[in-house]
Image 1 (cartoon, helix red, strand yellow):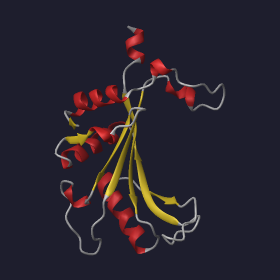
Image 2 (cartoon, helix red, strand yellow):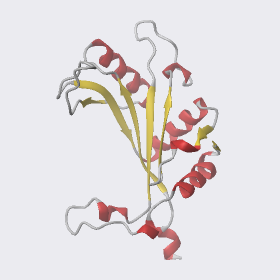
Image 3 (tube, helix red, strand yellow):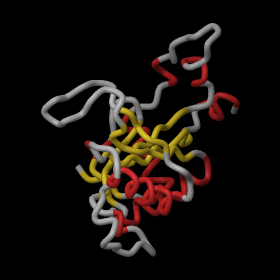
Image 4 (spheres, rainbow, N blue to C red):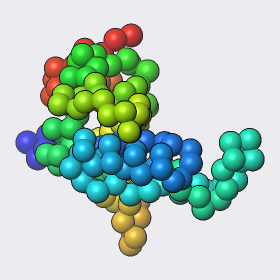
Length: 171
């Protein structure tokens, strides 16, 4: 019985991200959207490299994100799946048991109306799943790898999302 408890899968976090590519007015609008959707204050994401083609310098703010955990994460995922008509492609899931998908317009969410001052913004949603005991990979002292038998596979993640949220996985 104790072994089954350690095999349960839960959502560690959901990260909602809007990449703007530049600072200033657009970034402030993106932060406002994330705050309306998640009821949390977003943080800015900073460029790590310089890319002259895109006009990005290292250390320049280029987007914003919000990290949701526990019940807030589950509630937001339910809303996001509703926007996607409770369907998600199988290629959205990676081999480590995580998945990501995008929503092209924030106004697709319930009770969100188009504001001409803000414009149209899309957002990316990334979800990380974990099993109990996976802290050993992240702790500072006696850091260890998670054994292969304890890692979450793509198939287990797909089944969890189907069962927990009633989502149809296509492909």
